[in-house]
Image 1 (cartoon, rainbow over the protein chains, first blue to last red):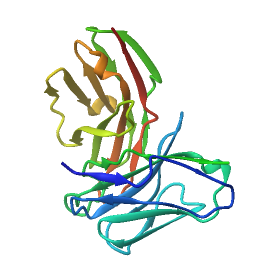
Image 2: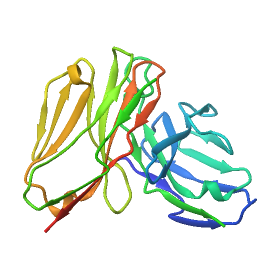
Image 3: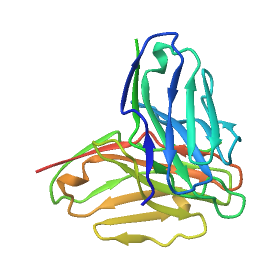
Length: 118
Length: 114
């Protein structure tokens, strides 16, 4: 089974801190994603990567950056944490899609990191 | 733009009842993929099914079944004889072909009471 591991289940950080959320997958998947989940808003895509050192903005990239130095690891960085970034953060990975599609493969999710910024 | 609507925010049923979760989507692409995911209280989203736009066959997997109708842009999910373990948040998602991005619905919280 694919295993997507997020380094922390719960995090509490202060406003203005630089925050790193780490995600590792063990199935050699090309694609990796960061979503945030908020009540009533579903899942919103922050960033994704379809290859090492490649990154693409999702729907809500403001205030975030990412790093993918190795295929198995995808890090989400909050440059200066703010209270409106308090949320559940979900990492996911997927194998290559059919044809040119990144998006047609099922996503494999980690357990999530619940981040509270005070 | 693509959009997924799960009109039912919360559903509560008693064990052994059948329940249908609705999913309506909007897309301009002719090639797209539809997904259902389950998020139990533990938090990890689990993939349940994928359908592509060219395959309108309904699917049954145990107590789960899916009804895909392009004419109404719907991809509904039915649980037969629900069980307490079915309690979870269920998400419908749409991915357009090519470079399109995935869009998730807001989710439906299903509570199955004993």
